[in-house]
Image (cartoon, rainbow, N blue to C red):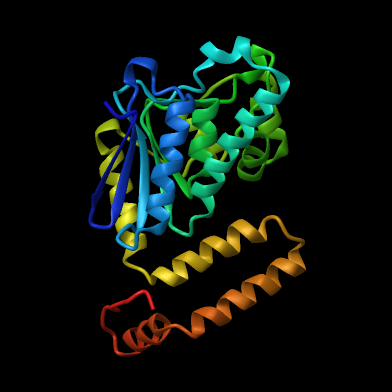
Amino acid sequence: MSVVLSELSDRILTVTLNRPEKLNALNAEVVEELRRVFHEAKANPEVGGLILTGAGEKAFVAGADISGFPALTPVAARDFARKGQAVLDLLESMGKPSIAAVNGFALGGGCELAMACSMRVASKTARFGQPEVALGLIPGYGGTQRLPRLVGKGRALELILTGDPVSADEALRIGLVNRVVEPAELLPACRAIAAKILGKAPLAVRYALEAVHHGLEMPFDEAEVHEAALFGLCVATDDMKEGVAAFLEKRPAKFSGH
């Protein structure tokens, strides 16, 4: 049985981490499977966006599988972290929107995986946290960097230094998630958001993702230059011409992705 399941429907690829008996914990096999799925999704023109979720009702991803941690050396641990970071960076930078459908515990690497998505929708039963300090560790899959970018330095340090988890409602309040819904509404809500995004111009969506992700790493004036260049690229597309014409003619746009 595959540890990562994927299903494509209406250009939305639903990726399910499938180790419910281990609360979908990340191990080397899962990380490698995610890398493969993300590479294929990036290259596949039929995939417009992704939804990530966990199998079962208890967990999105409850963290890393720590059974192998006692045998780690410093060099092996660094390599472990870098490999996971690369997979999450691939998800974030593939140019296609992704939504984390967080159906339960999103702790440690699970919280980090959710943060690498374009947005996060949480079930009311979800809980988020970076509990690594309780193991004598720090987050290693980008958590020390993405969390402060999402919720601010002070709140991020509180979560990382105490290791305390927060509820879905608290995650919404501090800006860690975009929406909180009833458990039965989680996947339908995510699919509705994805479908709305996929109804827009594909290249504009891709360039908007790039402008935000790359711009956050630049000084503001450089980020504005980058934004203006991407704005210029949009103007060269057939989709921009179609979008403007449809607006002026008061009709739905028919985007081609060109």
